[in-house]
Image 1 (cartoon, one colour):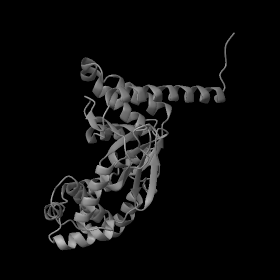
Image 2 (cartoon, one colour; image 1 turned 90 degrees about the vertical axis):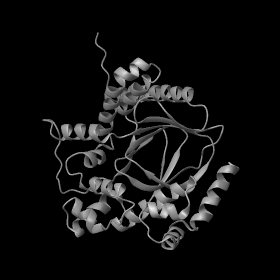
Image 3 (cartoon, rainbow, N blue to C red; image 1 turned 180 degrees about the vertical axis):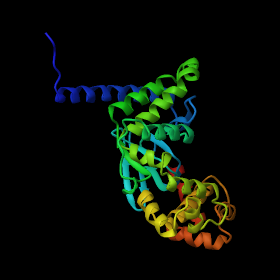
Image 4 (cartoon, rainbow, N blue to C red; image 1 turned 60 degrees about the vertical axis):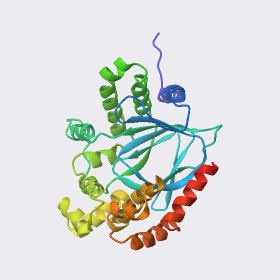
Length: 316
């Protein structure tokens, strides 16, 4: 006699398998990383990390990547809005973004454990364009609102299964060499089909002008880059570029450029670079102007901020 499964039963089964896979992923990550830090998994662009003490949100630049938290939670702040994500939602950053990031709830008893996966431009572009031009692709109006370059998405069945299959090959060098690339491609495809898919397709597929302008800025932070320069790179008028840029990033182009420069410099100062050198590396010709803008953004002069950050890390 045939057994029929209704939609509710199917949802319950899917939730069960997702939870089982999450538990397996967490167990695998725990077995690989025992001290705080970031380690390579052996698969290009895939890293595991652990944080066992609370860190306040600090300036950072998220590169195109997926961050999947398997234990604990992480916080990011973009344009004053707080995003907290854990093993129910993963973070998808489809273009370089200036944020503040931290782990305010991490403890030795409940450390943050996560997987960071860089988005390979070549592979993502191939997949995004293939999906957009496939026979069964759903076409959306090209002039609709741009999806944001920073998004949180649910751990659906496809994402969870693809992440588990990707991490399974870490232990065996032959599996990594033979299957790693294809499993990573499968993972990217699951992201493109998930809740963050529209954001990723817009960044890597057809009509990715804003992502291209950000890539241009990121490669030229040490030079004076104007909004007109960025607009000209993608063939837009200043007005159209401003509107589309804010839709995609939540920041105006001027705010974005300033945040990218200050956040990048702050990260350099945090690892020991002197203020003048960090300022020059991100396009400031005057260290006094840099210090004024830094203090306006973060509430402290660069040196004070660096000292306070180091003290906090030493205390924790």
